[in-house]
Image (cartoon, rainbow, N blue to C red; front, top):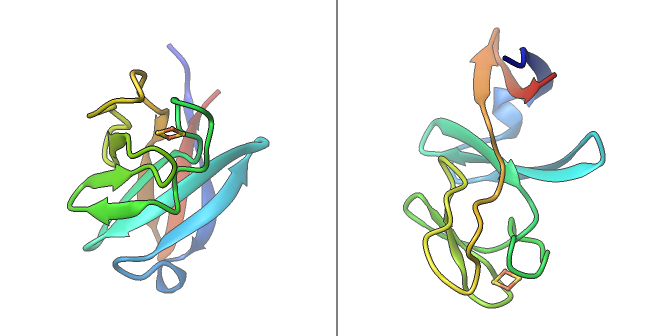
Length: 106
Ligand code: FES
């Protein structure tokens, strides 16, 4: 089973509730969300047509792709509606000593 390694991203103050942060993780675009104090990270790449997903509107725990409207669960990356049919990768996020950290399988 792959080991999870956590990498520090930013102080918690830099990602307040309702905000999102775009990062590159090994050249993969990733967006990290703070949803009312809970942190989640998913790939910033819609599985329908590889559009940027992270700028989409957020409704509860769902994000709506700004290009054609596919919905994904921010907590899990699970696809919830067409035209996308495949999940987006999701990454574990934790806070340690005031730093937001993202976990990557290695
Ligand atoms: S690129 Fe996201 S729904 Fe088409």
